[in-house]
Image 1 (cartoon, rainbow, N blue to C red):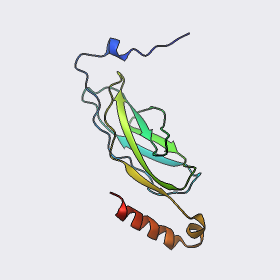
Image 2: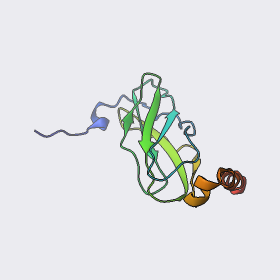
Image 3: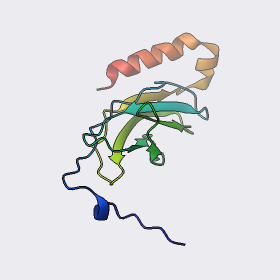
Image 4: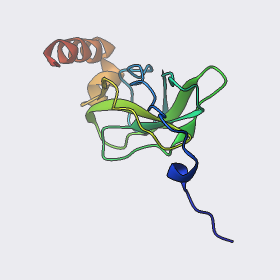
Length: 135
């Protein structure tokens, strides 16, 4: 059995893409190999069902996730390397019309786990200054 995606064949005339999603919300720092959950919302001018795609900033994306009853999309991700990442999201409607990417949410994975475990103050200090230096 084969399935085909033919949005243009059934797309209503004048269909508009969803609005740019809100900047993702979720933790802005964490530990490598620990799952983090992010969410974002948007609206569709045509009130179509929407799907969300999260870019995790490390070369990977989520699958397209269907909006929840709240209208938000939710995705989880686990980073495997320490560093700074930008999580962003875009939306598409059931006909394939896509929004632009949202504003990114900067994520900081600890650069030194030894310091984080022994001296939590240094981790908070690093995160504070990292946020000041980010555009």
